[in-house]
Structures are given as C-alpha cells and as structure tokens.
Image (cartoon, rainbow, N blue to C red):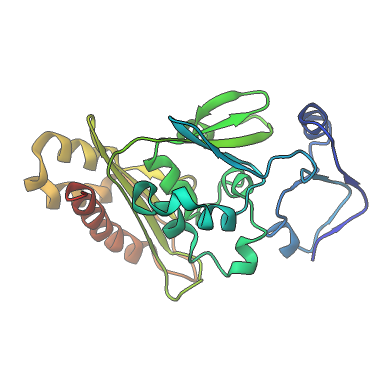
Length: 262
C-alpha cells in the first residue's frame, strides 16, 4: 500500500528537477504501479502528471515517447502496429493486464531499470535514446549505467528499417518473465541482449563477435559462448542453470529471426 504525508506536483520541468535533487529520498510518482506495492510510508512523493509528458510524437527520422505515456498508449499507437513488425505491442502485451498497462508509464518502465523488464531489451535492440533534464540525450545502453539522479523526459526511437527481434519467456501469461532477450542485425553485424539477470540486460559480446566473424555456420559455437559471459541467478521463477540453458536456445532463435527478417 502506498502511503505518503506530502505530494509535490511541480508545474515545470525545472521545478520537478529541483525537487528531485533536493528531496533525494522522495520517489517520483509516475504511474505508481510498483511504489504502491510496498508498505513504506514516504514523507514525500513527486507527481509528474502535470508536466505534459504524456505524448507520442514522430517526424521523418524518429519517434518521441513522453515519459508519462503509458504502456497501453504504446500498445495501441497506430504506427507501432507495423514499425519493426509490431515489436512494441509485442513487448508490452503480456505485462500483467490492460488496467496495469493503462497506468504503468514508459518513463517509469525505463527509469526503474527493472531486471525483469520486457521493454528495455527492445529499446536496446532499436538503439533507442533517452532525453534527461540534466544529462541531455544519451543511449538507453548508456543510461542503464548513468549514476546521477535525473529527470527522464522522453524516450527517442530512431526510424531505422533494420531487423530486430524480441522474446520473453514466462511460466504463464501475464506472469513476470524469467528470461528476456532481443536481437538486431545491421551493417555492423549482430547484437543480442539478454535480460532477467543480475543488474541490467547485457549484450552477449563474445557470442556476437563469434557470429560476426564466422557467420551463421558458427551459431552453435556462439550460443555456447553465452555461458562464459552472462551470469544468472536462481529465484522462484527459474534456476540459474535453467535460465542459462534457455538463454542459449533463445540466442539461436533471435539470431535466426533477424537473419531471415523480411
């Protein structure tokens, strides 16, 4: 249950950022979906609902998703039904239920950096960026290691016609995934990201290097290389050993999908 004694509703990005820096223990209340699950009583929360950040815009080169746009907004946005073969609706459709996706914001989904995120692996494969109040524009991959307390304003997705693929493995529909992954193939070769592991999703560098050097004939060798560079943990959803085994198979499926992408 979410409990707090004071709520601040800034009317400008400048005011919101100043509060964020001054009130270091105050959580940002975006959709508030996960904050509500705790039993802690917060002295203050910062509500971003009055900043006009719920939007999805596009121009000839990129999509811009405001931090307060919801997962459902992304799911039903018409251009996303065909962009990257509908990867965005596919990424969010199994996240709990529609009521949850109507509240959960895209900014919160990225800023929280949850290890079980369905969305972050896709953004990595799409080479997406974020725009921050202080840090400016940076890649999502760089943002995952960004250490400053900063205000995420929007997510920027380039309109690049390159093959991407995503996958999430669950015990049942709407459950938390026990393994997520994404892949991309462009002029620099293959990039594969593995999620649901300690910390942020990781690019399978060694595995991709083998594949980029030797080609699809080395797919089995590349998949086996995951064991030496990707660490997993055990929890109630799956053991570390099971996740590793599934990650090798997922790697092969994702690579095959982007290799035959038309």
